[in-house]
Image (cartoon, rainbow, N blue to C red; front, side, top):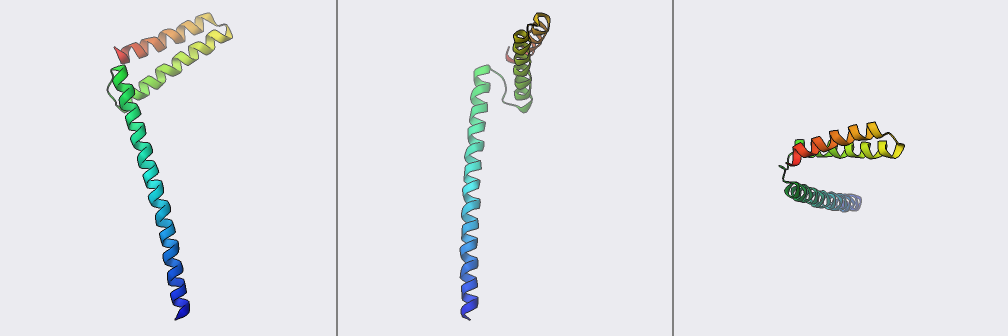
Length: 97
């Protein structure tokens, strides 16, 4: 009898610990999701674009093209830098309007 009671209380304690961990992680990820959503809404509002996955993807690709232009200029490649710069500005200009 005493052994069953011990293991039952041990199981309840372990279950309460697991529940505490799961609820804590759930709250953390809910907070993180809300923060990312608010960031995307604020950024898209400032840029004047719709907060969709496609527009965020186009924004990231445009910024990567500008980064490639900067790297090409740092290497001393004027023609490659101008090509990446024009492509990046064209893509971002079409996105922002």
